[in-house]
Length: 122
Image (cartoon, rainbow, N blue to C red; front, side, top):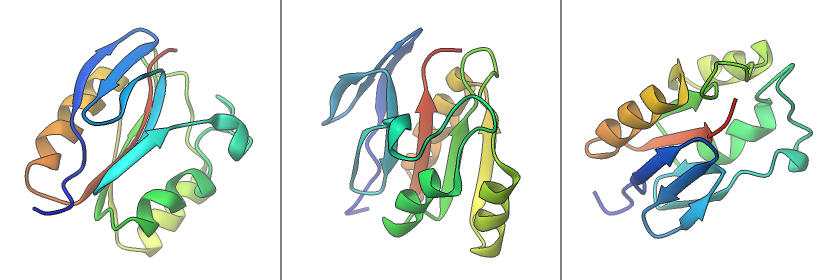
């Protein structure tokens, strides 16, 4: 796969390491790359949670499957509008606790165009 999604090589509380991107706290990853996820860009907060604008970038980069991490303690919510947007676009979505989300994402990255939003704390 030419534009494979970067693998997450380390996850622990407040710290992630991503292939080719280095270390950070939260990441937006997609086929061909990614970047740190700055919640301030879209006004994301734990509630109401992940915004449609947060996932749009992943869609724009060709993600056919998207993994959304809900944080290590499942505190991060997901706006119903976000799930509706992905459903309308026919994108398969997984919502999981962060360590489980990382495992699923890394597995999917081997075979499909996967994107993900990863929150490494609560």
